[in-house]
Image (tube, rainbow over all chains, first blue to last red; front, side, top):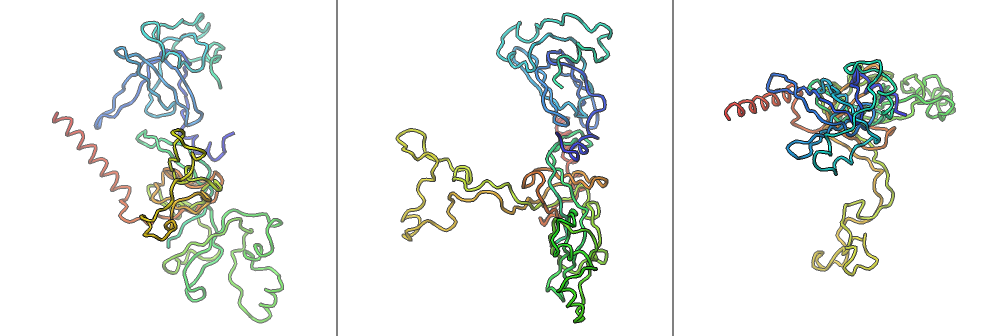
Length: 140
Length: 262
């Protein structure tokens, strides 16, 4: 259990609306970037291969293939620089960590994932809803 | 020689600042501390304030601890002092305190630092200030040189026999001018940890007045729940937060100019 005082310190920094996604989702991570005085949004799209930590320390890792080279970025879930995480496509996975993808080469490595059998019955894909299908894969 | 406060280390976490930058911070439950005694030049030959932190149950405190904070207290010694007409020192009149430490001062303390005064984090520190944190490191017991001094040990193979974590040679006639014994201060196995350590020059990231919390950037000695003393840093030439922000801005601007030139 986390110390109460510790929780009190972290609480104001935690996002009220945590981005909803699952392991195996193809996502666009919208990241705020400060260029000089101007702020713009940069998008990093890829596959969620891991999510770990709790509270303020929660991080998620996005993997993509750039020019044949695997690129992974790990983001703090609660960072104010992360504007939003758009789920583009959901993959069917049987692992909490998809590190085995690192060993795969070529087309069948990252991009081709089995699609989910059923999309959530009620919800349109844009709205995150706590259907059993949406929450089932999450550890917490 | 500055006034500080007592606190307990709560633990480490990370917070985002207004720029969205992440900072590793240690949370300290700091104060409120009560002034139990004021040391004066005339009486004690030095200036200091004695602070108490965290109440202790009266039934768990010994009589000396109870009498230290109570002006109305009957003991053989105090009664006889009273009879003899000796003046008893002013008392804070609070619960017995669990932790009591003195902070030495260069001069007589200000008038508001009288016995019984309560000090909180925001009265002594402000955000952006640099502080020193004094604590007792985690004790590791009697350890060998590899753990204690980061020696490399001896080879695992190549004919090493039963000597893999030893220090090797400790002295020679050449290095020690023929004294025949190791130099003073030679690194060797021994007690590691459980010593008083000061970590200097840590940034104060946040002060929580409701919960009496102080967040400093970086790690501090000791386990979670360990007692620490926090005081303004004694390092010199520390720029103010404003000056540092200005310097950073200038740096950023400089970078921008470079980019344009290219």
